[in-house]
Image (cartoon, rainbow, N blue to C red; front, side, top):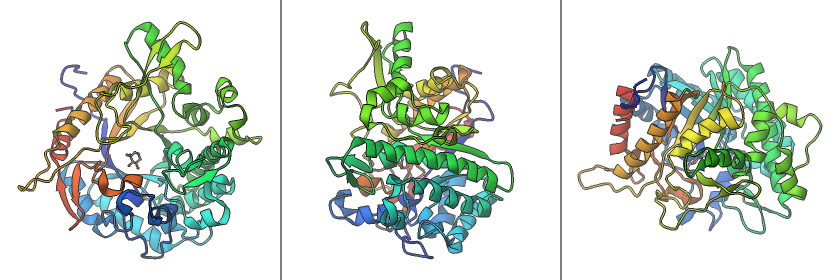
Length: 459
Ligand code: IFM
């Protein structure tokens, strides 16, 4: 492999990613009923400028045009999510075949363009009916309902889709959706009394993942691949000395929510020192839960945007997680510090720190918001986004060239979309969406990315 030209191996896969609520719109058509994000975004004060996903990119009606664009840019892989509230508007029970039909049409259009579909079953938009019935992720029932929904989808679409992802970023819809003492920034926006209740929601989500894996495998009419998508936090050695590398390794389970989400999913255990640190806030774990959670995976989806620097220190625990200095470069989100090495170290931690060197990894999201401007000439010259993406792709290349099992990369996102609590104010797309007329305008980064795909290297 040529280390100077960033030439990826032939089988490295290039894709783009989106999610249902962020792009589809059409929230009241063909039998769909509200999701928690419809309710949350309709509540004054929850989403910036009062934006909602009710129209978003109107992808529900414009998907043929969007898929044509994907193909024109050279993408051969597309990651999208399926809306639970379209398939089972009440969250459980009767399947809405009109909802299934939409995804069947979408997938057929992808296949007609030679684009492989990669479907996420849950990207945060759970049915409001389940929130009303039992408080969504606060209840164990949610895990069983998710598995039934997964079964319903896979038994109907499994002839066309063979790449399945269970849940996207557990931390975001649990720890940001349920909080103690303040209104959470994500749906359902539930204030709870104790941190234990919050950890219980992510435990239930892990159960949903485990039961979901089993449901997918038994419902699929053909062999398929199953993965979890996680945005685990990445400890990056401040200096690549043996001491700082060791510190990053030790810090990894304690960074972000790793000890409570990624570790149990991949190892079948909550780390004991992590549980001890949590004390009374630790979730209640029933007998057999960890076996369910710890399902064999065909790959891991890795969503990576930023990272944290760590250095070695003498006293226990042997590492220090560093704050970013005020002037540290970042993109157009408060949390989006530019740490390209985090992509490389994330992959390496799975292989070495978690000890799973044979687990294929896909970057299922990487990208950034930028302050894009549409010029009078109708162009968006987002050189800042190219700068960001180029560095992360070089880090991906480093991981591949050192022999780690990184198999592909999906850019987030194909197009600007509804960025949750930030509404349409933040633009993550490589394609600009003019929300006034729904025009799609490929940004400079889209043309640049198309060249990367064409040459199979970072250009
Ligand atoms: O837009 C989100 C996506 O839904 C989940 N991962 C992070 C993205 C940017 O915030």
